[in-house]
Length: 261
Ligand code: IPD
Ligand code: CA
Ligand code: CA
Image 1 (cartoon, helix red, strand yellow):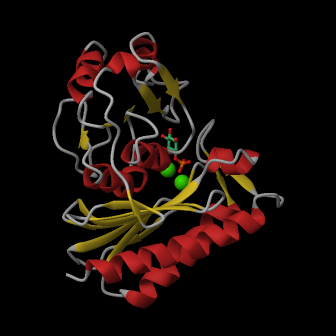
Image 2 (tube, protein in one colour):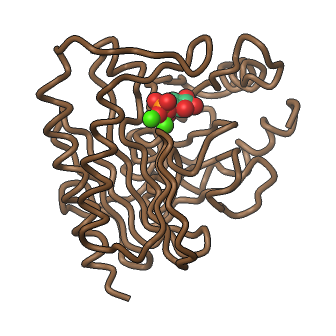
């Protein structure tokens, strides 16, 4: 398996799409709604097209799944998993936190991942058993041992208004157990921030493979730990994700157990 070639393609696609997004952050956007608070812009689709064509040119035999309605199932063992803008709400409001997330998976396990934050020019990349990097410099999770001293990240599902499983119960429990919680609006970046030690742990529910696949590999390769809320090892088809530096994982699992999981 040529992991280097896969990663180069993911990086090329993410950078091309990122350039287009940066050029258009101030542009007028066509916004449509998939739900009450779940919006999508015309630039999500444009970003997806750029990434799709770049990957398709290099690997026409591979399967592809991307958030904005793109799904190619050729029966391949390899599947590209793409979020053309992770942080769409931020992008639509010109809040400067969003990224492009691309992973290549084999049987649901990520082999390579690229997450690109085009406004900060930060490229997170990882190869299975090959480590994780931020702009080509190796990254590692933090050394914090106690939940009490930890900075955490999370997010809320788009059905927050309708569903009781909306993470507000976990949020209020963690809020009084850790140092602080951030809600930045991009699950892929949240995972990358665990990988490089900017935050110590991240949890969220009702996520999709395009939110988590690349970022989960980043954490694993940076010597962190990624499971669901029951401590089952990460698989991109699972909707719950708990990622941490490993040292606070059990403490986070205990808090999650108190809620409705
Ligand atoms: C969303 C972001 C957000 C998370 C949501 C995701 P989108 O992805 O990652 O941080 O809380 O659950 O759906 O819609 O911006 O691609
Ligand atoms: Ca997303
Ligand atoms: Ca998206």
